[in-house]
Length: 67
Image 1 (cartoon, rainbow, N blue to C red):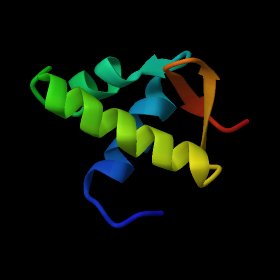
Image 2: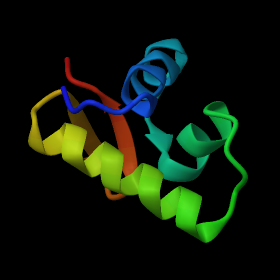
Image 3: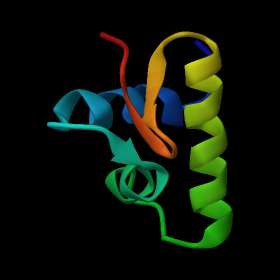
């Protein structure tokens, strides 16, 4: 797991979700302003977690916990 304080919060938000979340939803759950730079930064973190096999990209732009 990468060392950044957002990663545990991202995983917690996805654990509480009933389905896949978009980067904008995760950004909102983290309490970040919905500015393009924040959403893109969150999307990059989600993509990194997909590469590491921790998350899955259920649909284009929709992220969920690995089953």
